[in-house]
Image (tube, rainbow, N blue to C red; front, side, top):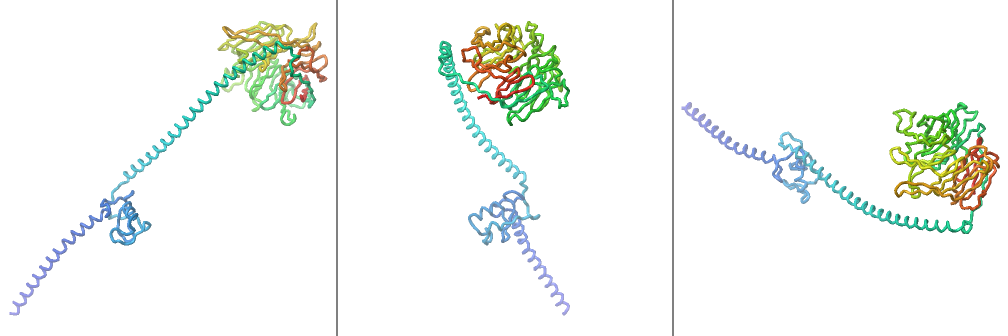
Length: 524
């Protein structure tokens, strides 16, 4: 009986355990399902119900209370409410923290974010370009208005210039019909005071030139005995007129025979000598730019002012050689052949060369040439082609000088049976069908009856007056005429105790060059 009761009790216990297990199993199944559902819900933002991202505006962030949201969603929420959407706890924007969790599934939006950044960049660039375009359009319209204004001003000035030329022509015609003595403007007196004398004991000074832009005066000479250069090494002395005529520098040009002429252009000095060479020297950089080898002794030289690559050499055989600086090979400084030789049909040396540019009163550009027995003008046509026009000037010429400002030509003649004379001409040119040139004699000035050395006469301007300055070998000085005077005798005579070869105006000084000295006079 006892065994039966024991086995029944055990069976009943097993039955109860089985029922409890089944009940527990049935109770656990819905909980697992609810947890799975909650995990799925936690994979997205509870505000917008969209998945979180691992970067960008919707990346995963946590509030102070521990709830998870998309960054942009919670920031927008906090603009209107300062509480957590889940638990209503107080939340501030600075409490938001980025979450880095491996169990959270986040969308990879890096490519999308980069595309958005590029789109925003392109939009900004487009706005900048549109802004620049608008500014350029405004500037373009402003320049158009400015150009229109300048064109109107140009037309107005042309009209005024034409009226001025017509008035000037009428005035000249009326002045020519009235004697100079009847003109109310009196001729000013001349006062010259010696300011400085620069000695050159070695002598051989023949020509001077003045660079107005740098206030430098150049005179051809030999080196002094204290100089280490060879006695046959001819050059120039460079004198600065800025610091009271204290800076004097000798520049060797490596000429082996006396220098006959020097001409300046910009920072370049062109020199010629009896050693059959032309040399171009940069007096600012102190470098030799070019050596031109000529066929015979060179007496004069000139720059082509319209094309400074071309230089002219006047030879003692009566010819003019034309050199082109561009004909040299690379890294070479010697030019042994000319591009053109102008045959002047004379056996006398070319004493004077001067390039004349085309202007309103001179209707061609070309080269003025003068020798002892013949003078003329080479009109430049094109491609190194020249047409010769002979000028009706007497023989026995000593110098020829053209003044651009007054369109006057000064021809000086050495004394023979009569005293030296200096003839002042007006150059008349026409270009209706072909270029024609003629001379009209304005005045003849009578000079010294003694000629010792070949000198250069000049037309110089001072205090709105125009003067003729010539050497006076008889009195060992100079003679000065005002071109408005009617008398042939000089207006002013200055004794210098030496024979003057060349002259020029430099600042307030009248510079007079003799064989062995340079004298500077203050002109007032």
